[in-house]
Length: 130
Image 1 (cartoon, rainbow, N blue to C red):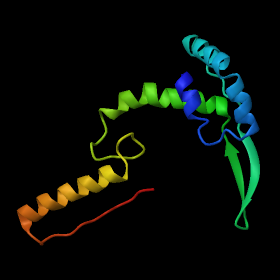
Image 2 (cartoon, helix red, strand yellow; image 1 turned 45 degrees about the horizontal axis):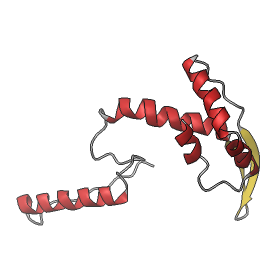
Image 3 (cartoon, rainbow, N blue to C red; image 1 turned 90 degrees about the horizontal axis):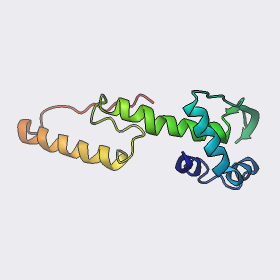
Image 4 (cartoon, rainbow, N blue to C red; image 1 turned 180 degrees about the horizontal axis):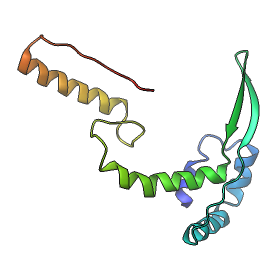
């Protein structure tokens, strides 16, 4: 869990809340592990604020750093091992080692296989459900 605490502050260490979190990372990680063992998972309220970017005002509701640490831990260590074996192999959404280059190499393999089998006949349909 300590490792995930370090991962969730990458690139945002200039923020005051992150600096406070980092200064107590070791002790807060020990407390979080104890809470998980006791099956107690209390969440902090989200930070809510308005942000104006490029002339547009947006309402932001962001989780606290402490919650991001436990969320990363739960996702990577508990949920991902359970669900990964049931996912389609070509599904590269947010999985380690399955980014753009993985998808591109799979597309190339599929095109080569199709060309060998059918020549230039056929169509390609690409769908992004984001």
